[in-house]
Length: 295
Image 1: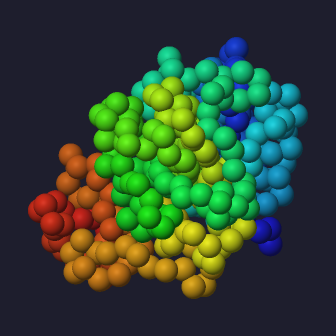
Image 2: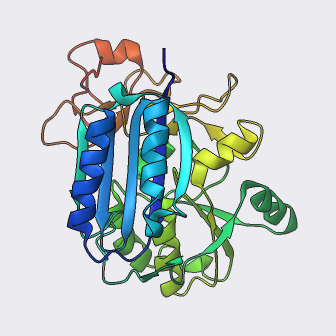
C-alpha cells in the first residue's frame, strides 16, 4: 500500500499567463488523483497537495519541468489527500492575500527587496550573536497553539490586516532592531518582510522555509514551542512526541492544541477548544459565540 504524503510548495516568479498554468495544474492533479489547494497569480505559485507518495512525487517532477518552477521551495509533511475536501486550483491577484499586489516586486530570482533569508542554523547563530525580535507573520489564532518564544504577535485575523497593522505605528520601535519574521512554510514572510523593508524596518530577516523547516531541523528542542496550525483536515501538527501544549481552551481553560470553527455562521473566527468542550452543545466562548465541533 502506497504511503500518503502532503507537499507544501511555492515560488515567486513572473507568469505571463496564469490562467493557462491553472488549467495545466488542475489537469495534472486530477490525472494523479491529488487533492489540495493551489493559487496562481502573475507573481507565482503557492500550494499544498496530498495523495499517495508516488503520485505526489510525479506531480512535483512534472511541475518542476516548467522552467520558472524549477527552483520552487518544497517541503514534505505527513498526511494524505483525504485531509483536503477537494481539489481547488485558482487564479488570484496575489498568491498570499495581503491586499497589496501593487507593492510586491517579483523577478526571476523571487521577491525583490525582501528580508535576509536565514536557515534554522543561521537563525540560532544570529540569536547567539544579538538580541532579536521574532515577528509572527500568521493569523493571530495560529499563534495561540504554537509560536517562537517571546514573539511579537500582531492582532490580525487574516493577512489582509497586516498592511494597516504595520502602518499603525505600533511597531515603529522595532525599525532599528533586528526583526525575524516567520510563518508556516515561508511564503507569507516573503511578502511581509518586503512590506516591512518598504516601511523603514532596517534589519529584517525571514526564516527560510518557515516553521515547517525549522521543525524538521530542531523539532521541539530549539526556540519553537507548541503545535503548528495547518489549514487542512489535520488542524495542527507536532514536531516530536514531547511538544509543549501552550493553547488554552476558551471554554474550560484547560490545555489543548485543538482548533475549532466558531458555530455562528457570521463569525469567521477560529477558536482554541478542547475535544470535550467541542463535543458538548451548546458552547460559548468568552464573547458568547458558539463553538462548532469538526468531528
